[in-house]
Amino acid sequence: MMLMSRKPALDQSEKADSADSIIFDAVTADFEARVLNVSMGVPVLVDFWAPWCGPCKQLGPILEAAVREAGGKVRLAKINIDENPELAQALRVQSVPTVYAFFQGRPVSAFSGIRPASEIKSLIEQLARMAQQSKPDALDIPAVLAEAAQSLSAGDIATSQAMYAAVLEQDGKNAAAYTGFVRTLIAAGNVDQARGMVDSAPPDIAGHAIFAAARIAVELAENAPSGHDMAALAAAVEKNPADHQARFDLALALFSAGQKEGAVDALIEIIRCNRSWEEDKARLQLLKFFDAMGHGDPETAAGRRKLSAVLFS
Image (cartoon, rainbow, N blue to C red; front, side):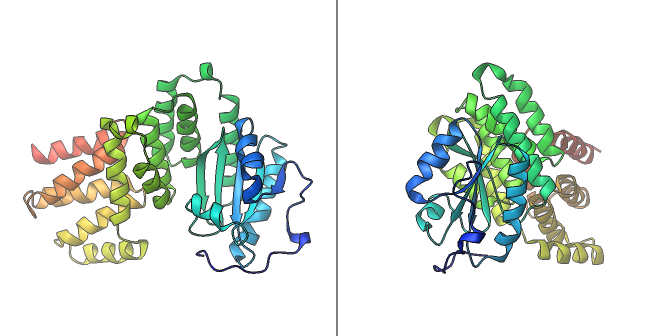
């Protein structure tokens, strides 16, 4: 649901108790004090909602129950976008519900739409763990980066995101962690936020060779066909296996949906059937996939072996 014009706010019975130090309403005037400053010591979830938003009324109780269950390890600020449009604009909130997680004065995670209680609980656990590990001497950065990459490859986005954020808290110029965090946003479907991170990357990170993978990953996600297109493309390939363009487009759709192995295999099949198709288009796209996944991703290593097997058979 996209941002719309102002509507009447919910009555007091539907709003968070202002006396609740764990779950509370926040506004533009006190955002710095109640969210940014508090987040220096305790992670704060920020729920952007609107009175006219049906999904917001479903997600709100899930968030509140999970935060209360955490017993103060994480707090929840609820922000009505109709009453605080400038905050929504500043944080690139384009639909509601949107939830940001702040820690030590900066956003470390975000998602839009409804999420199951189990995913919310997992996110809160990771935020609490990140807060416990926030001391500079608490992290073995190479080990955390390796574990974060493995978690992302396994589809555990929340864990990976929290780990990359923890590294950035300790080393704000770590290009590998920054690039990895961008990948987690893409994997979660938050492509606009990933684009924002890429466009606003600090010079020390933007100039790093590894950061090129983040740019490529965002571009691939922005240009990928929709899920509806993916079903149609799969049907077209099944009907005519020699339709290389349909298979190529299917590979893009699969990659955008996080199905990396399927995407790689689709391009490998094109190369196997016609190595020079469209001036080596499939192989060049496959190399972009490898760059976007990163050299440490097991799927990259597996894909390179498959490519070598086809090219040198």
